[in-house]
Image (cartoon, rainbow, N blue to C red; front, side, top):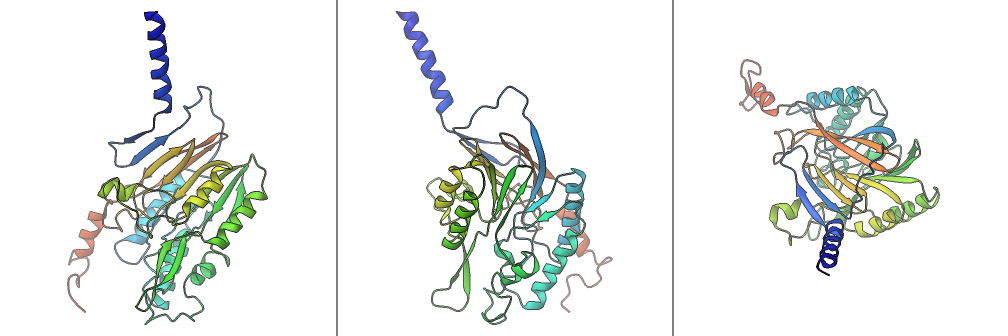
Length: 344
């Protein structure tokens, strides 16, 4: 009887261990935060790898702070890994929200020119900093042909802000996560995280058109899910409307009804990984780190190399050796820049 009870207790403990929900935080800044919920244990057999691609986000390219040089260094590192393609996560320029037409086009020109250094195809997702003029009603009127998302559509989106494509049996959704709202009681507009009804209907139609067993990977700039604000301010802290997708639950439910491998996002400039029923939500740290001022809260400048297998995805966060402090020192060296520190 005692032996029987012990066996039952042992089995119950094993069941609890398999079903428990737990959060682990890596001691490595590059590893970031990992949350695992109801995840299946890896199969002991060898997994069949299909391909790899890079996911990079939050470049914030600009003439200042060595941003162009840093992005080119990141591209060189990405090329060395020989991915099938590169997928951006938005916030490619710094920035179009609050500038005039000349500055915005200068930034887009710089980003497009840098991307010519890629040795592989590049797919672009729009971030909030690609949205043109909505903070600057005194510089960009709403009737400007490039106002809002139109500049991205014209320069990088082939007339669109969301799309899909297939690669080696995997279906990719590239989504527009930026909603635009009019400011209350003052001129101008603001952005929120939003998919919107029109795009949500398109997602449903797009998924209905592919085989039910076809794996799906989705990407957007503003996170579907992040615990960053809760890690900073406590577990009961709410996420801001510009930090996460305000209608993300509807999107998540739609994706989870499919063979959903994962969701790639950016915006927060930190490296996070969450796993739910085998589907991975990956928030990629920034190429720019802390907006080209060094690492963001210990998360270094980098990108993710994503490996795609028949049964899911794995990611590696990779840095590229950028040292913002050296560049800032050079920028302030009067022998290099005689006018440094002077108003001209």
